[in-house]
Length: 105
Image (cartoon, rainbow, N blue to C red; front, side, top):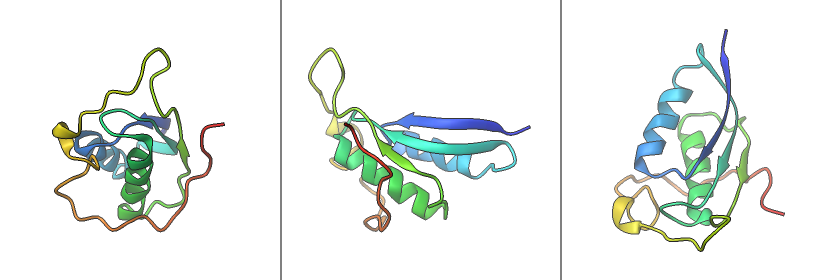
């Protein structure tokens, strides 16, 4: 029986690898959606990274939602020095051609 997943993520290189591994195991996982949140980088970059990863994997059928732009109890503290300004620095993925399904309200 497949495990159904909604992945809440701020994809930099580490989480990008994990997402691609999950998408590479369709017999084990049914990904219902990705929710991008701000983390080591801002929400705009994490959302774009989710879209890029789904396009790379050929899974544009999976919806992407923009989640929280900052932590609830404090301001956003980013860490671009970890994975670069986009979170996926070092990779040469094109800009996404698909759009998010919904954003913060």
